[in-house]
Structure formats: structure tokens, C-alpha cells
Image 1: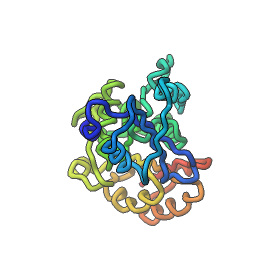
Image 2: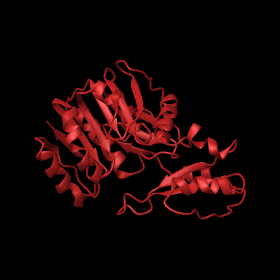
Image 3: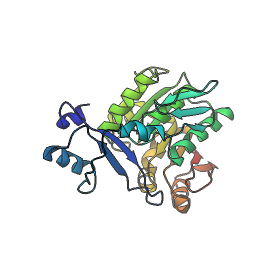
Length: 272
């Protein structure tokens, strides 16, 4: 990827995880090199995180493969999300997502919850023709939406260019067609709803946003403005202790809670 060009011909494999679910803003990035990182590479890693990296020599084992092997497939609704270590499961909608550079691999409860919420909407007879996935991460939720509503137009955006590159690669792996038409996915870098492509596509009858409670509240007016009449919004990335504040914000904008979600990481489904 162009964003990893600074690492030269042998870029590291990056794997992100969330060591403390009570601190959803704090992510731990593991960088696996096949050589000792140079001072320039360490500087690049420092820019990716919130402080100086800790360096440890791990020996000759393929630690990336070992870490991937420990990530069991995730099943939510009719979906199975698996790493390349595992094979697709029969009679399921399978997505292969490598747990690497971007967030939203299906391993976190919020992503799996969004998959289940989308599946429940489809099971309940909902139909959508114009979909936006805001903060897409790996592209997974956009892929799932297109699998459920294959005639829809879909756009997936993220503030992080790396996430869009990862989503593009994942689209190729999962045979998701990219483009502007029905049944196709459009990818774009965007800060929230600030994008000419999003403005041109609006209004959306389905908006999915798996980010954090703070941005969900900040973006509420923009989401409402971009939502079609009788449209649906699926929100995730918030703790159960943050549900009341997020719900109140959207209720003040005229949205109704169709499903309040459950558990520590609820997924909210709201309708206009």
C-alpha cells in the first residue's frame, strides 16, 4: 500500500486489537518485522500509535500466522467471518477478513452485533436501495449489506486512508464488485459525512456507523440530514452506559428507537 511505502520493500504486518474493552478508544498495534526495525521504521510506527513502541525479538516462528490461527470464526445471523486460516462454512454467507491493518474484523462485539442487526432487518422484511457505511474499517459491514440487498447502491467511507485500501483489498478477496451502480460498492476517504461523494449519494435509506459514542453524537445532525424519509440508522461502538446519551440525541432529531440492542456493547436501530 502507498501508506506503507515508508517501510520500504519489506513492510511489517500490522495486527490491531483492543486489550481493554472498557476503553474503546485505546488500541494496541502489533508490528511484525522479518528484520530488526530501523530508526526510520520505528519513527513511522510511533506515528501510528500514541507513544514510542516497545521492541521485542520473537524468534523464527511465524507469529502473524499463530495470532491469526487463534481468531476463531465469528457467526452472526447468517454470516460467518473468518481469517484466511479457516475455510468458508457451508450454507452461510462467508467473508474472509484478515485481522491486519484496519478495525472491524468481526472479532469485536460491535461488529458482530451490527451483522446480526442487519440480518434481523432483512429477516423482518426491510428493503434498502441506497446504503452508507460510515467508518467502514475493513469494509465488512458494507459487504454484508450488499449481500442482504444485492440490488442496492452502497458507499463505504473511513477517515483513515489505510482502511479504504484494506477495504478495497478485502472487496477483491470476497468478490465484492466496486463501482457506482446497483449491487456495487463505492469506497471513499471521508471525515464523517464531509464528502462530495456522500453528498451526491444522499439521501440514504440505510446508514450504518460502527464508530464511538462521541462521534455518533457529533455526527447525529449530519446523519439526520442525509437520511431519507422513513430511513433507518444502525449505530454501534457505544457502551451500554452511553446508550441513554446517544439515544436522547437522536430522539431530539425526530428518530425513534426500533431496537435498543442489548449487552455491554448494544447496537441501536433507529428509524425516521
